[in-house]
Length: 190
Image (cartoon, rainbow, N blue to C red; front, side):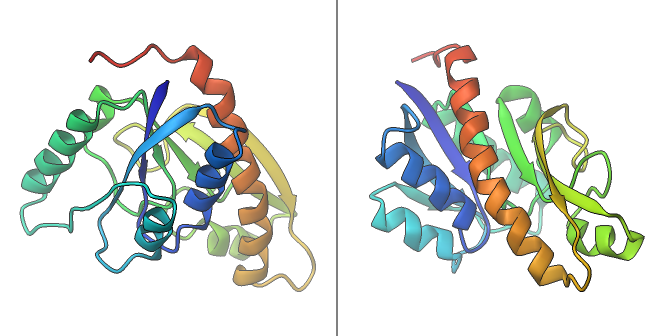
């Protein structure tokens, strides 16, 4: 069975969609671990409830040491796919070259990369935004796009209201994308 590692920093609603899809058989894989950079991230509680092993690697003053710790841990977990589900760290080139990693982003890339995509889309006055699943490279949301889904920007939308509608689409798209990718992944070396 294919092995998935989830990286997450926050509340874990996107990760929860993946956990639920595995629990219901919609995804045929094992989530072998959740890794967070935040000790108090709610995603860790969600993972514990789902009986998924968790690890926390807080950012270190020496970024290269943090990169080494993260790389070593991911390698030890032997994932077929790493899923960045609200992980608010840029991954180093050495990590993105070694592992197959996908990310979910709340905008229609290449438009509005970075941490404030929803705010930036609203400020630009666009009529639609959405969500993108892409391969992770060492840039900021610059990896090859795998899938996208559009979300209309409504009159009176706030950053919060638009982001909530995007998150709904994002949850379905990440699960569908993982399901489509799983058969294409070679099994990890064991």
